[in-house]
Length: 526
Ligand code: MSP
Image 1: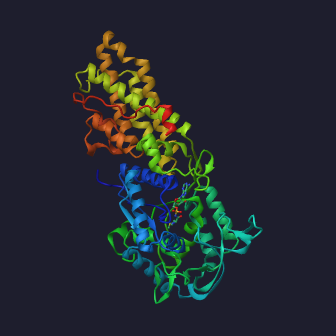
Image 2: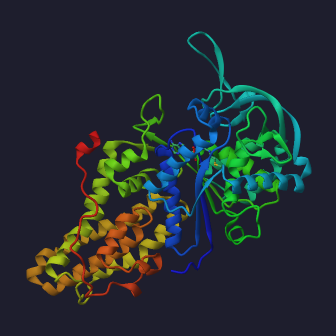
Image 3: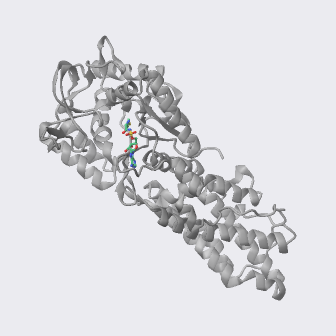
């Protein structure tokens, strides 16, 4: 359908290429993809950007450890992230790599724009302080904790648990201290800018303590975007990385069609560990460059495994690949969206995964589709039957499908509460299954074949609506459902959830095939 609503621009964080993708990256990709798909289904023209963050000391060091030139190393690992997007059926419109020419141009342009618009905001000085390479972040002495190793050597740790090193070097600074009040005013005027609320409070308290100027260039390594006019310096990796969000829509060409259409972004989807960069530094850089600020930063929680943080040393790192092999792609997407509550950490456990997939997908939606379509195939000459008069129970189910569910779903989707959107959809699945049991069409076959046709028609129509509603989360399986019902691919967006587009009786359907196989407990052993 033609997009008739406001354009919608959504991004994920761009992933560091210092290691292979894990389930945390996969979760963020799926979360963002589900939002992008919901918006497209609801008639928005969507731009969805994801990509890789390839500069900085962390990546340079990892490349060196692997005996590779940074660029070759980045090409190799960036490919893994691009493949991940394919593997997870992510519908991104573009994949940005910060090592691309267009991004060098945009990063240098934002630097120049800050200098032109606010010449005092960038100045040359000397940085003396602590730096965590793992976080690519500066920390004040007061934020650090001290530890001691088994040999009695003292060391300091960032609040993230990462080791810090002392850095002394010539550096350009960004006058962040001048933005304390401007940022607080902005948060005040735009309470929706940071979600969830708890993260907003965290940022406001941090900014209220007063901001320090920020070092925005490095000189003791060279893997980065050169500072315009002084290529002894490379830009601080976060200034370059954050800029990807505007590179992706054509910056520095602010007159380009895509920039005018999509900037400012509607949603930056990120993890809770990087809110300071997105909610403090990024808006301050944009203010200084005289560019518009994004509308929302949504910080999701972390995915833990069997109650523990994923980590190489614990040995519980799960790759998205493992899950897809064990459960299937759409099952994995469903599971992550259904199990992780809005903005909170989610726990992944195999036992729970099997129970959830079997109850909601195999026994819930899958069984509903399978038994309905099989009965139609066997008892109605393989075509959608002509209904007779609708009774109260029929009206009730159809009304729920046509009128009640979509508004509830859209309300939850706008807040990125996909677990609740899915609960709303599954109430319809459960109602439809309860309706099958109550109407018992298998018994009507002999007693009242005309009534059986009406019941099967009502069920097929409910399944059509469910097929449309579930597409954002389980795109391949929903397509199978809609294909089996012979729904025109052009008639699958949310504008077709209405009585006006109700199923055509007489349509021939194919022999039904199972959509969601039941998982056996042994699969968890894998
Ligand atoms: N390169 C920066 C982001 C720059 S955005 C301008 C970065 N990269 S990352 O590879 O470390 O993380 C990418 C995204 O994955 C971040 O949003 C991060 O919060 C998220 N996650 C990393 N581990 C995660 C989990 N275990 N669970 C959920 N998300 C996690 O940060």
